[in-house]
Image 1 (cartoon, rainbow, N blue to C red):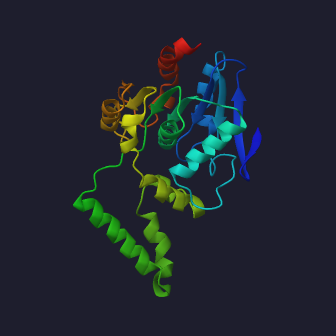
Image 2: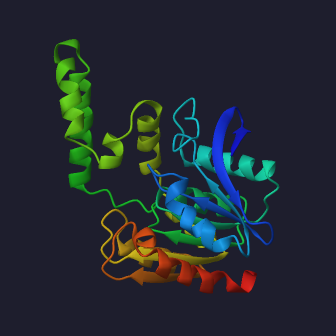
Length: 250
C-alpha cells in the first residue's frame, strides 16, 4: 500500500492483526521483497510494517540528499502516522544505521540487527591518500576539456553500491557511509540480537563483536560460512533464531 509521509509517496506492506508492532528496515539498494519472509513468519504474533525507504523500491526519492538523521526522522514520522510506539525493529545493513539512531533518540522495545553497518573504519594514511586522490581526480575531470573521461573514471572507483546509484541517491550514499554510529551504542539499552555472517566482507564479524561489547544488552550470533546476506541466505535458520529472541513477546 501507499502512504504519504511529508510529501513523499511511501510503499509499505502491513501484515498481522494483533500483538506488538514490528518495523522491517531493509539494506541499501534493497526493498520490501528482501524482508517479506520475515513478515510472513512474524504476522501470527505481531503487526508487521515492511517499508521501502525513500529512494528505494516503490517509494519516492527524497527531494534532496539525505543523511541517516533524515531517514530516522522519516521513520519517526511514519510511526506517528501509524500510531507505532516503542517498536520491535528488525534491520539489515544500511537499515541498521537508522534503527540505532531511532532507538537512541526515540526508543525501541527490541532490535535485531543483521550485517549491521554504522561502525566506521579507522582512517589510515592509505584511506586519506585514496580519498583525496579521488577528490582531486573528480575536480580535474569536472573541467570542460576532461569531462568526457569522468564517467569512465567514476566507473572504476567506489563500491558497487556507489556505482549503482545516481543523482540525489548517489549524494545520499556519500553522506550515509561517512557517518559513524559508534558513539551511540553505549546508550542503546533495549535487548538487541546481532546476526552476522562469518565471511561478511561488507560488515565484518569483528564489527558485530565490537557492537556486542559496546551495547549493554546485546548478544551476537554468527552464521558460519556465510556473507553479508546471511539472514536471507539462511532464511529458515534466521527466523528460528528470531523466534527464540521474540518468543517472550507473543
